[in-house]
Image (cartoon, rainbow, N blue to C red; front, side):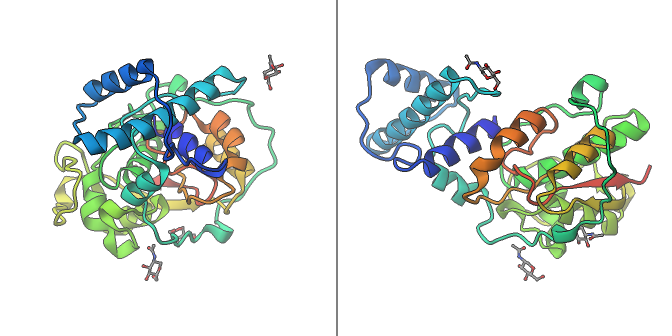
Length: 293
Ligand SMILES: *[C@@H]1O[C@H](CO)[C@@H](O)[C@H](O)[C@H]1NC(C)=O
Ligand SMILES: *[C@@H]1O[C@H](CO)[C@@H](O)[C@H](O)[C@H]1NC(C)=O
Ligand SMILES: *[C@@H]1O[C@H](CO)[C@@H](O)[C@H](O)[C@H]1NC(C)=O
């Protein structure tokens, strides 16, 4: 899972070298066996030079996971398809490197005064949350967060859980400061869908995982956005309230050093809510769409 990965590697990076295991570790034969089976599971092949490097990174990650899971934490870590990569590599490959234009320094979401339920898991309330898709591809973070939140918003209003087209966002949302495979923001993507007058379904606009020409066909749009609620930056209380009362919320994640300070509250509380959110992490730029249904 993404959450695991970003936590895992950010943690290693912050706690000092080796950041996700770059230094020479002594690797036990058991660890080699684990790596081999992980390679089989994820269909990985390397040259012998790369193998040594990946093995080192993997073992660093593996040890950190084991140490974490042996401790008394509110969440567990685990391996995933990125476990042979360092945090720097993941960041370079999957995250837009410029700072994002989060416009929610002061959001338009108005917070109430509570009280709020102590726990909410939209998945258990009904069919409101789409299943997790493979999140390894291009632009997956911001596009999955966007479609996931909109799908939930519509399901909460209509009872119907759609599957919306991430690829349309990759191909078409550039005018709203999104950058296809290189990244974007859910709040900007909601604005795109709003002014574009709709987004198509996954079935008519399938996910390709690479940048392409925009193939939006207005007659095939199946979901629409009436308005976008931006939550004031770092207002976690407002996020809790929005999640508790209204909708799963999309997050944008900026990889900063204070990441670790947030992780517990955020991860223990939001952990279950929405697919694709985890690379997109924290209370940096939260928003949710108000659908037109
Ligand atoms: C584990 O953490 C919980 C919650 O912080 C605490 O109540 C419990 O005492 C801890 N258990 C151990 C063995 O430290
Ligand atoms: C932020 O906004 C400016 C002005 O609209 C734009 O030129 C820049 O590319 C944006 N940055 C990102 C990361 O989208
Ligand atoms: C919400 O955020 C988006 C993009 O980040 C921005 O375009 C829009 O103007 C914001 N809306 C409000 C009401 O601030």
